[in-house]
Image (cartoon, rainbow, N blue to C red; front, side, top):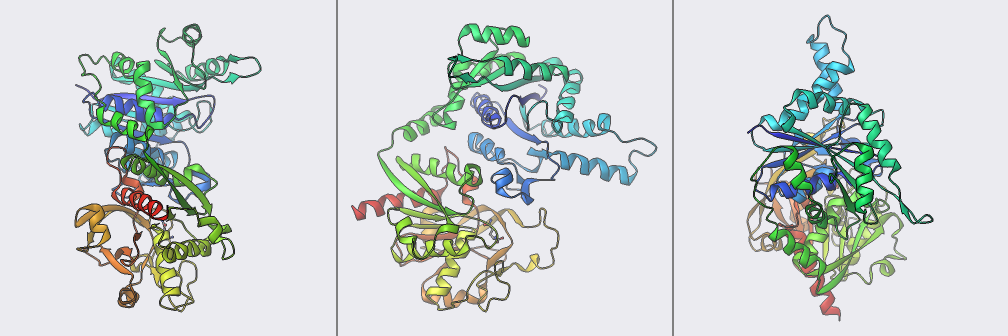
Length: 538
Ligand code: GLN
């Protein structure tokens, strides 16, 4: 059987949750025994989001093979439980980079290089690339941006061409729109959807299925109206109503028959019914917690939900695993100081200090670590959060008052966190951090080993600075142990304070591998410790 392709575009507004719809469809198809992957095509000119500020683009998600990608890839992995790769996120920047490099090499000698056919050919090549590996029955492609945007036109044009180039049964298109509810008129409005579909059709792409995001249920008449005006089969207009959790959306889509419709369009018959027992189990636990904890998330991008997306999702998974509701309190590290740290953190059952870059908010993070260490509050530091745990210990326990990372002060007299050796010669900023999966060896008897139930793990990274091993002996003698190391380089990946009930800092990003079905062990252990801490205070 040929690999089949599903394209998901969006209209009317951004942030409608195209990624969640694509991931939900993928989940349903996967649960029927099909091999599915999802890729995202982003219409911006950056090669990848690695150089973007989280305020611009939310979190930068990192894959095992070290690609810095769009955060939707995080949803894909969380829903499917399979790893994505460099090939799963393509930007306009990557497309142009390839075409322009080929032009310089002389690949188009004598020809004028144009959007059609050269750019669209490269887009099509990449759209079909994962399908050509033979590893997938279905490849779902999410087209970033909103139909009608100047930026996404070449992607839509590529889909138009593929509609003719691929056998009809190998490709189907889904368009996601918004049906707003006008409170004053007490009415759902379909006009924006009609206009959005018209725009898509003017570009030559005919949607097979329309998914309407809505706050209110869509009546059968309204669905018929959309079908009529938008020229799709009656019944192939479905609703995606606001859900209590993103993880409920696959079940809502099943209810609406999205997977059935897609299989019908793709001419796939006799596909087994979806098996979602473990997913439903997870949802059940999520919906019926037996306890609750309050966790402080100390970071500087807290105004923006998407900046710590994977961390927040990891708490959802770890909460369900513990049958515990996790209330995450965002605490802006820039506004934490000695006079208010107590007041901000006193009610917390656990403190997580977030990853980050640069100097802003750093002293607040250090104060939060100190509070957790001194008050025996479960502590979990990630990347920069781990580095600040090391700094705090060096300052307060070893007495290096000036200790800091050389990222913040290259002239410090106590560079307990320092630039990695191989970073010293790097001047280029894009894609040059220590990225992707590395092995980590866990010390026998450590908290980390207990949490993972294993001695050798693999986690993903995104950093330039590291624990300075010149201070290792002194740190360990004073009570902060390096319990996880890279087996090849000796780089410190985990620090712990064994005298504290739960104090762990990790150089890697464990949040990138947590899924509902396989919640990340450090998060699960942290929530368990928070529950115990809360009980001990009661
Ligand atoms: N800024 C730190 C580094 O580059 C930490 C990075 C992070 O938290 N992802 O090492």
